Image (cartoon, rainbow, N blue to C red; front, side, top):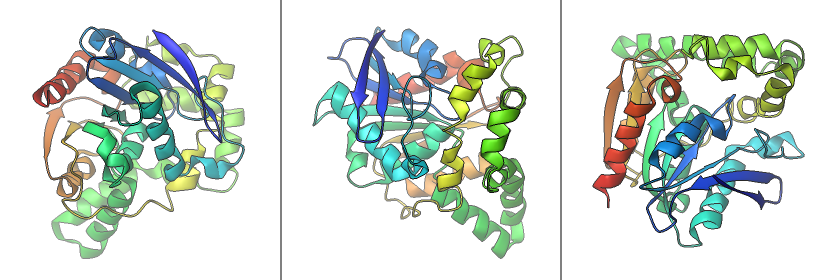
Length: 294
C-alpha cells in the first residue's frame, strides 16, 4: 500500500492507496469507531483491477483532529472527501464511493450535493442513511402513524446511543473512562466475531479512535443537513441492506431510494459489520456496480 499525508486547513489526513491509477478508482469511507483498516482487506482484494483508496477520517487512525469540535460538522467532512479525490485522482477526477456506518451517512450528503456529487462515479451505501432524510422519515412515521409508525419507532430504539451521546459531557466521560468496554460491546452487538483483532485493541488504541470522533454525533445528530429533494441524487447508487443490523434498520436504509434517480437495493442476512463478516459478498456487489458503468 502507498501512503501519503494530505494537509488540510483543519487536519492532516492519512491516505492509503493501491492499484494502477489508470484504472477506475474506488474510495472507501469508514465509520465510527473505525479507521481505514476496516476496508484494507477489500482494498487488497480489489487492487488488481481498480485504483483503491482509503483514508482515516479526521481524528481517527493516523489523521489529526480539528482544533474545534465544529470541525466534525458534515460540511467539513465533505470538503475532506473532495480533497482526497483531488489529491489521488486530479482536479477533474472521480471515484466510486463505498461507505459504511458514518462513512455511509457522510457519503449520502456527498452524493446529494449538486457540486460534490459530480465527483462520485457511483455510490454504495452500507448501514447508514442520509441523516436529514432519516430524521424526516422517523418524524413523519411517528406523526402520521399507520403502517409507518412501527418501523419509525423501531429505528428510534436502534438509535438510542445517538441521543445518549448528545447529553452534555457524557460522550467525553464515557470514552475517557470506560471507552474500551463500551467499544467492545458496540462491536460485539454489531456482529463482529469474538476473535477479531479489533476486539483486542488496547485502551490507548480505543481512546485514539474515539476520543475525538464521537463529536460526529454531537455535531450532527440533532442538527442534520437538509433533506434532499426526492429524485435529486443523480449518482448511480446501490444500498446494501443488512437485515440484522443492530443500528440501522432495513426500513430506514431502503427509505433512501426515493431520493435517487438510479438505485437498487441488495439484501443480506447480516449484522452491522458485514464488511468484516461477509467481505466477498460486499466486494462482489461493488464490482457489479462499478463494472456496469465502465
